[in-house]
Length: 185
Image (tube, rainbow, N blue to C red; front, side, top):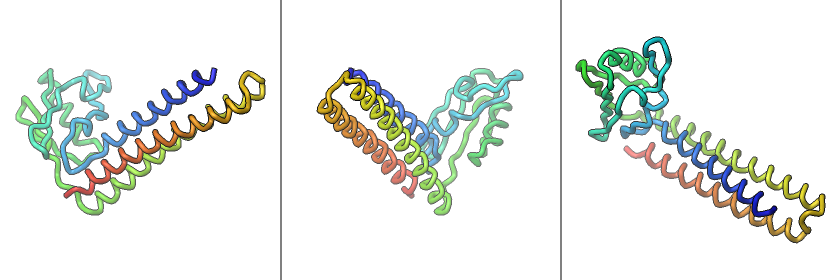
């Protein structure tokens, strides 16, 4: 019973960490990354389609993304979608592929991105703490129903706290790496 509660909590905390990692990956740094363009939706034959379902995104150089559409007819639509995104990127097209240069970040923009990264990390920490709270409530209910003893409940809560600390430390590590990446000139 206790192991099931802890296993469920561990799984949900891991998912919160993975979601935070995905959020941080979409933040633009001075370096090119295919994750920058993954969330862009392209108007393709009347429907909104994620860019990564229409083209291959590669990084031939640290400050350049190359978008190679599988359908040449989609090139203009992809170029328009990148221009209209909030990323501030300007693609250049040769009719076959799109080259998207990544301009260097200003100091002000770097500080703003660090704030956004910290916000994402805090949301991840809150998600982990919410999982802990729900698991703790479940353990208390089991104890009140006399399904587990007081000692078992206390040990399970200590284990739950160790899990929480571990996953919050993972989020902090992700944040430190992202901050270093953003502030790197």
